[in-house]
Length: 285
Image (cartoon, rainbow, N blue to C red; front, top):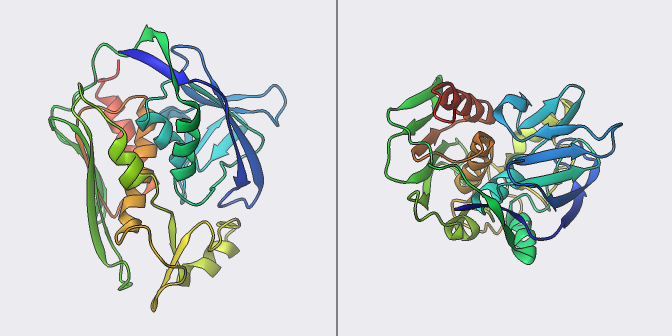
């Protein structure tokens, strides 16, 4: 199998969830073997930030990558889309510090990549997909995320909230076996799921300098009486969005190993901890 990049540039512009700042993204074709990486074109010398586990420097309500003084935040939705749709190499130019939230999901990223298509490159992918042979766990209190031996690459997630409109939800989707990976289920069942927040937490988060760019146009908001901005795209849209976040964070591995990723009440921090623990096993050396 050959590596792929995008066939033409993609441009999106919008507000960042936490910063509230407008930024523009240009996704450009990149050379074989270069991987997925960000370029802060608004900073002197346009510093490059690789989309790798080692570059993670913050995980509070989103995943942030950094190198020296340069950083880029809320990368998970875009990176999930690029990785699942088979974009191995991409130069992602941004003129600010946070990826646009767009409609709160990965739907517009999917549509943008579909509109230009992929370009096969001369370099081959890894000769084999790493295989998880024994369970790898990370936990904090009753929250956990793990990688279990499996015959395919699967992502499963569970959430549990006191609010009746959310409650306990579980969902699972598969990328398929190493020889038959497909992005179709991700495109139809995961990518359109939007980020969500809890009404009673919004004021505190805003006072803490977070979610400055959040609105009822780009995030679902749930209160004790139900959803403030229905309808939902799926009855269990919140847990599907958590899978989107998990896929984006684990894309920092470079390639998804053959394993069943299983998470419950987890966070960006736990997702990244698991990714690092997988790397520590030496499967990607």
